Length: 229
Image 1 (tube, helix red, strand yellow):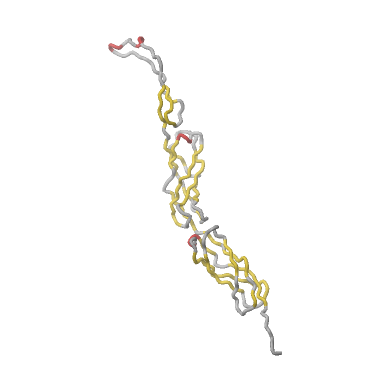
Image 2: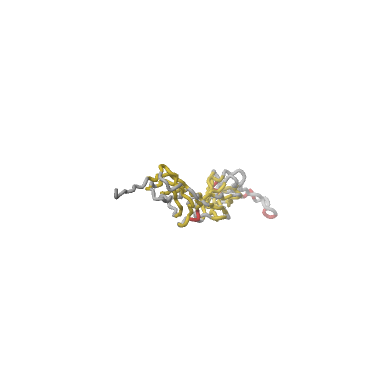
């Protein structure tokens, strides 16, 4: 009896071969010559897929990037349950965190392992479970895109416009103090932005921030009106 190919499938044709008639014993001895095989019928059967598990998978830590995408190290992974030299390998392996936010030992769903190879269709891939990895805070860089010139007012206060490299769409707010290096008139005077700190926004905890930035602006002379001369 043989199935016409070795691959997994439902209701595969089975050919019965090698049937011969032999003598029995006792009263049936010598009767085989009275018979011949008229025909051999074909039946069917199913070859079910063999379970294949992925072992040695490691989910990798990452810096916050605003997505749930998780990277999985496939170079140390292996397939358990593969038969002999079957042509079946890991093609791609990715996963996903349950949310995008910073956290330690977060659960990673490793549900995107894809097989390749001519024999891949003969296996039922069991996706890896129990994976964990961490998402660490992203370093937010705040910088000055403009510092406003001002007329001398005997104070060092400065007005600046800031920018940062947050992930697009993230919600953040911060406070800071901006001051000229001194109160006096001058061109291209140094403006220091100090004590930058995050204070609010839905994505606050996903970031750290630099505490200082700088720019340049001018303090121009104040016009004094002289009267009574």
